Length: 247
Image 1 (cartoon, rainbow, N blue to C red):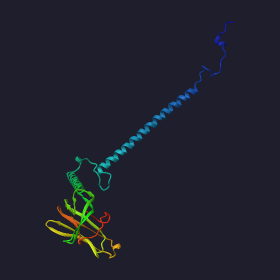
Image 2: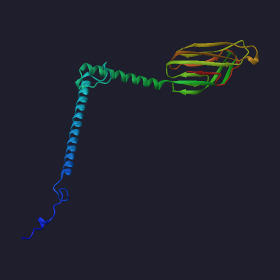
Image 3: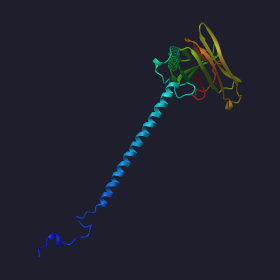
Image 4: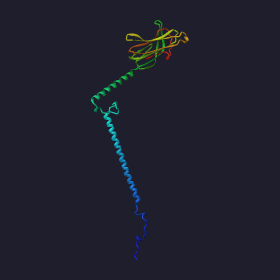
């Protein structure tokens, strides 16, 4: 009897053991991975196409805005076209508008620089019996600008212009009527700007009353203004909240 081959005597194992020919699970995994990669590539391509479509749409909108002159329906605002693309008439109108705006800005700046404010409070009074008047000496409590200057009993105007002038005097006098006169001297003449008159009680304990007046006047350079009480030895309060003068 011939000797048997060891390969022939070896028992046959089931198909599926190690080294067996069955590989269906590995093949399925490979197929799923390839399909996932393909789907991812398709999704990326779709996203890129969508972004390109939106970018083209935005470019078309910008081009339409540039052709229509801007986002405003009335054509107002800053022009989208460059200066070279505009007509000569449009350029001239734009340049004229720029010049006008610059002139207004310069004038506004000058007015702001030349605006002056002056508020005065009393520090002393002087009575002149020969002329039957009482004068008030002032000092600045608030000053802005150099257009007005207080000099003792008078105020000198350095910058001409329209000013709001106000005056108040708090009297403590038993004379039946009291008041003040604001006058201006300049350009070779003297005139009264306004006057204020008030009645006074006869009882010394109650003889308090204030007289206030105000007005708008055009003052000239070199004008000199003063406040006069047409009574000698007039009794009045020197408190800053009772008696004051302002421009």
